[in-house]
Amino acid sequence: MAASDAPTPALGLREAKRRQAMGQIQRVALDLFDAHGYAAVTVEQIAAAAHVAPRSVYRYFGTKDGILLTQPEDDDMVAVLAGAVGHQDLLDSVRALVPLFTSEEFADPAGYWARVMHYVRTVPELARAFAVGALEIADGLGAAQATARGLAPDDLVTRVRARAVVGALAAAVGDWYAHPEGGPGEHAARMAERMHRGLDALTEPAVGPEPGSERVREA
Image (cartoon, rainbow, N blue to C red; front, top):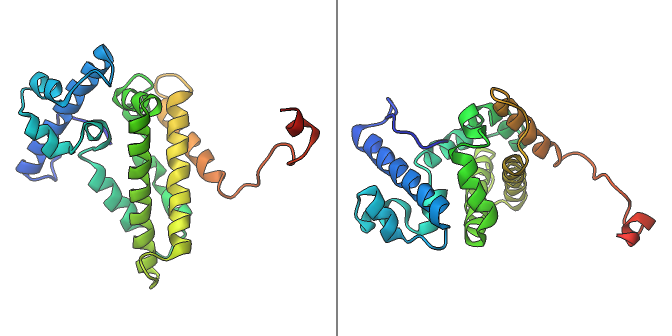
């Protein structure tokens, strides 16, 4: 879930090199975005600063927004999630996996992922691409669970539930980066709590004034 220079022992040499190259391009791109603003930086400038050809950037990421939103570990994450779903309720499956996707590095309010999420929150085209990516992950999980249960991969109820679960996680993660809590050494636990709160919202009744109440009308 984070860019890293260290090859993963389980990976083949070619894949390890690919992930290292992608991580280097991403870090260079973030530095350029921070210095000049997202809109002002071109793929060609990123490639030059990373000492690669522009075609390499496009081969790895497809588009400029993909530089921030396409992570080398995405396939691993989706495979872990898809392998965990089955006959167990999807919400319970994802809740049990929250600790696998929270770490001090991932939850660091000043770290790599916080920098990425800053642009996701503030650049409309990135926000849209992030939402599309979340839907694709959700539909993949929904199809995996539906198939495991002997249903059609596009079963409506399963797909809706999968989109709701992934949407809750995405909202919780975005909320964490906008409003982080705790001090050093506490961030991972606090982020996990925030993600569980997001998942809890799917089953808890809504709170607040009833529609049509005096308070709502005054607002």
